Length: 177
Image (cartoon, rainbow, N blue to C red):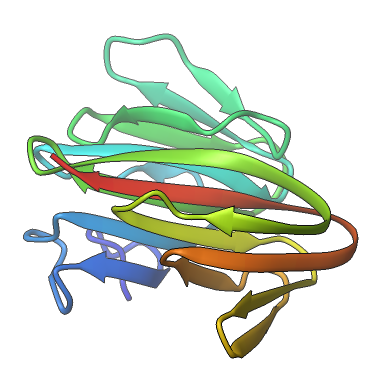
């Protein structure tokens, strides 16, 4: 989908309510390729967290706050989506994972995730989405899914995760207020 300001495109991973637009979502998870410096779209009443998934990094200049440079090694960065924010690139394009939620209705948390071997993972309620940055098998009841780089899985209840080598990824947790 086109960015709100028309200067790029985003791959929408999930949105609630289903089929909500950019002005009426309660939460949204997406990935964007940022190839040029410029302003971020503003979203009134929205909290945003993003992380660099690919590329060298991006510096954000946020109204009334010190500039912050994000790289793939940076922790997820949370900020209000309704303040003026400008981005510049460290070196070349980046891909970011972006989570947004409407204040007063939902909260969210974006966490870096490391895993190797096999274990049961239990989603504690709300909405949990796992984005894998490598190869990972997920067994849910009698169904199995093979995840590759940037594949996402909605997790409800208990899932058995298996990998032969270390895998990184991101966990998105959304909770209704």
